[in-house]
Amino acid sequence: MITLVGEVTSTNHETDTGPKYRAYAAAGVPVYVLIDRHSRTAHCFTDPFLPGDDPAEAYYGTGTKVDLGDPLPLPAPYPTLDTTAFLTG
Image (cartoon, rainbow, N blue to C red; front, side):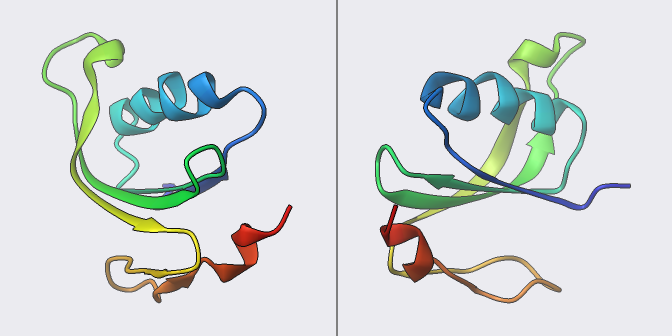
């Protein structure tokens, strides 16, 4: 079982922040960490929820957002993520 997925947005920003987000939630991945280079933010999504049978309706009930360079708290047993390295490139 996958317990955490981490992703850094690519040039296809809409896919990274839309369909992939919903797919991970629909699959029940408990923690989804997204480094969004487009908005220069880092996100930790938890509590996946699928309200019906349509995976396109899945979402995460809880989300934490910080600016790149700030620490991103993750749920136990994961350590806080230092996002400073994502400021370059």
